[in-house]
Length: 91
Image 1 (cartoon, helix red, strand yellow):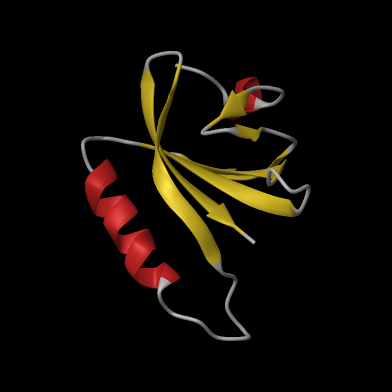
Image 2 (image 1 turned 180 degrees about the horizontal axis):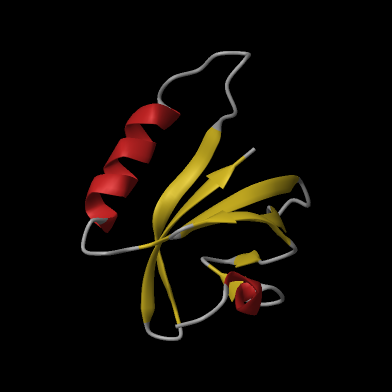
């Protein structure tokens, strides 16, 4: 089992993992950058056999657009050192 700070400095799902902003239980939020250099937030959630449910929920939420909501740009799955993670890229 890793500490969330162990993820800093790695690349997951094609995004460089920056500083840990917040962690809570099996969720963590990291600074990252998109391929075009835009700052973003990457949410990682340890998957406990519910990754398809999490990803599906995030994709449904991504379809909602409102000026007061933070947009979800991408949702998917990745692994880190054999641990399955659901990931969500936020603007």
